Length: 309
Image (cartoon, rainbow, N blue to C red; front, side):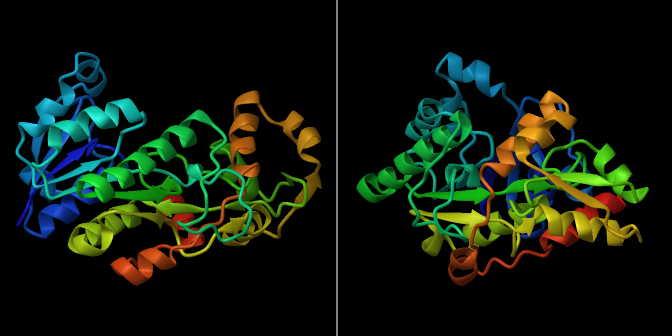
């Protein structure tokens, strides 16, 4: 049994992760601001110790790392670290005190792919501040493991799908009306030829990956791993599958992206552009071979599972 602190454990992944850790006999501490509840009820939450810490406020005062260190964890799972300097503050406080630190990165570190599927040894090529910062943290953690023995592992989830929020739709944004239009059998426009790819993952599978990495600690420390479903989806294939799931014949049209985006709100167009410009497709073979990761949900199954709820 280990004492495991999960920073941001009330979020999408934590909703599934903390009960899974409790079920394995661990002592689990959820560190959050204390302002939100898990996205699904589970009896295991009664066994979780909850510690309210406002990360941003404590980091500003230089105290967050010390507060986490005071919890005397064997393992720390950090779901909400976005800037290198703040990660460094935490790591310095935990150095020589913990057995394993797991950092949640993102497939956004890849940016534009040169070859597909993207693998962990490919150079990172992030194209926005979020991905750039995640890549910086990954590189620094790898350096800390190799030079100083800090026991860090990084994961790269795709877009996370699960209970409590709207999944990315076949137009690559979060507008739920797209699913309603498909259910009614109405025509749906897609950008270009609809062949750009989306690679997402169910929150329960991210939780499963974290459990695998903890249980295969020797194989995971000092490494970074992709954490997604088994296959990416093209936007066209995704849309066609959703029409058929709703017992409708696909009704699709295609337009060049710059023309197509005019039919969307600016917010939806920006979200869609973020996915279209990356056209993500990544491999999980490293996670399969080294950690025994086997995602429960395929890309289509995870969407169908979410829409049923």
